[in-house]
Length: 440
Image (tube, rainbow, N blue to C red):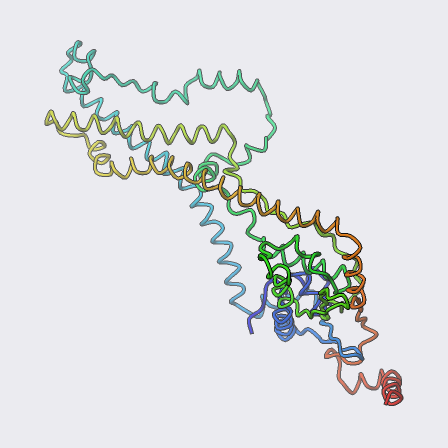
């Protein structure tokens, strides 16, 4: 049976002694999945089941079960190694986009310089030709290298110093946490989805809300953590609670007034006494950021992308002029010509991809804001509900219970031999049998 990573993380967070309800509420897992995950983990790590006199089960695990699994399964060790390798490979991929941009620019301008030298040699030392262009190439166009590399000129450095002041040990500002190559990748593709764990947070929070209320709730209490409540009769009949009931194995109950409440028996049993978990008023999604790069890094990225395009167009013009004159191309220029469209396409894509992504991020953030607003309104509505809702909660509280399965309450454990347990707990077992016989 495959081990569940969420179950293992929940067991560690809950101090290695848990019930199915503990894990389901903590990890936001379906109760059946939590049950299967605990059984699989117990069987693979020499965990133990402890059964109370009323039939509830707690699971106790060794504190080094992660090490036991690593030693037992070469697949886990291989997966951990592969994960570390992938982190290095992905970081290299992130850096490669900035490196490719610089290489593209370098190829373009090396080719331009080679053409300039070839044009000068073709001019035969004629001063007027040198003055009028590259020996007639370019139609009077004159290219000077310092006009292109202004970004690296001493004046540019003095402008930066004047703008920001002389600082011997500048403090790292929030926008400067990425290096140049990381900033290039961030400018192109962003920094990932900040809500990638949204579903995990949603169900973990709902599980905590249920546990905080003794395992019995009204639908309005979880509405601020859901997205689509439906329309019309679907919303009126609280069909959106079906997902919650299915995930945590809940049961609906109808009050004398016809109101629906829901209770979850598995989430009412805990391995140890736990305080109420802190939960937010509603599920809030984080807006996407266009980039973590600083404004200066974004401007430099745009400038380099533009430099790539302008340089490619200049190179194209010079190549056409050389072709018209029938002059042989230098090796560097010939190589640049063979991959010219690749160089130009990279520069165009370098500016087009962020532009398209910018408008996509704006649309996504508008949707996120709308969903956040809807959930916030439900939370405000919950706080404004009147006496009718209080009666509904009072009915739900009739089903609320929080039972702690203590170790001393266990009548059976897989940790020790059954005969030894019966000998140690003979008095407790006899008392339990007498109680049951008297109840007949």
